Image (cartoon, rainbow over all chains, first blue to last red):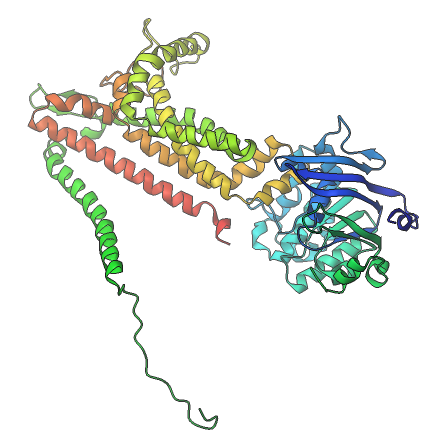
Length: 266
Length: 326
């Protein structure tokens, strides 16, 4: 039922999950997830807590591997190439697939400028135009005007919302093709949330964005397509419904989706 | 309670935080006695030492700290602890240089790499190391580890002997050097530094580490550029705590270090040295009244030195990580 909805998009598929299963130890947490993320589109992953959406987003840049006992089956295709293929380095994957976390997590010992350049420093990459990179990255994260006069201040001197946009800039400086956002606004106030959402909208035509959110309005505001995850009665989580955001919210096929998006549970 | 009526303020009640029940009172009393007792104890010790040491400070003057002679049979008697004072610092520093990288690696392994079960075993083992009495470590250092370390020292001399001064050595006996004492001390301070560092690592925001990995950084780069700078304040504090322990270490060093009243600045594999603590233990048995006074004075010097270092360590642990307060 899922696949038919996907092919409507004309954009070349950039990122695709095929038959993804995930285990932590003996416990299976995700079962048979199939999703397509077309390039230059925003996909929202929604669903109640514990449904596996945060786990799923981490399989897209192999961050779930850091959890001891994690197991994986299936394929994640990035431009047609499986990122779990033997010989593919997780580090190379993460260079192309950036990530923004739930809580703003700038490097506490670094200044604003150093945070933007942290990816280069950490991976030993060189860029001749550091100043330019700092400015463009901060501009793309729509925080340049607020920080341009105090680039050498500690990153922690910024407000929570500014810190989060700094973290977005830090990811953008590495020029990723895909940006993963795991509930990027859940720790922010409404004003900051709006700014981050505006940033997402501006970035949407430059890269593929996958965003996990608990906020139904946010999913409707920022995303082109939406996947509804659900884990029932202790069974592994999976995708119940996937389609354009318009469809999922206004004409859901599955009654459980209807209940969830209308706030009847979760 | 009529809405139009004047607001009536009820009688003010006196709130008390003092314990009311007997059991609480007893507990409160016991804890405050214990707390005050420790302060009184420190002051008593310091007072007692000062009283006994005063004649030595008076007769020796400042050269007590800087001179290189200890002669109780001369007239007047000469008591100077320069070489011992420096020896304490040198041995502690050597121990630190050896222990610090080891302890940080261990803490990193336990917190970030090892599976839970292995981490628990490693933690227990390191804590057990801290529980070994120092006399046992001293005996082990003398009889078992000493000969091995002497071989290492001879290798250092053979391969790095071209470096002037530091690896200078005369004769065939490599025993009794600050190098060996430093190694033995490092065994004793590794657990201290490891447990402090592990604690700092475990309190670190994992998301910051994850952010680094998500940016495409490897483990090594994440450790050097994110984890170490973030944890540095705590690690320095732990290192100073270890330094305090190393400075005060007595009996183990007494077993493995030659006592020579000549300042050995950095000839680490040369069998000359001595520390304040090991000197006190070796001289005290046969000392007359005035020599005892000089040994008391040495004790005070050591006491003040370690007190300063532990004060510095708690200050650094608190202050060096301003971001942890937000």
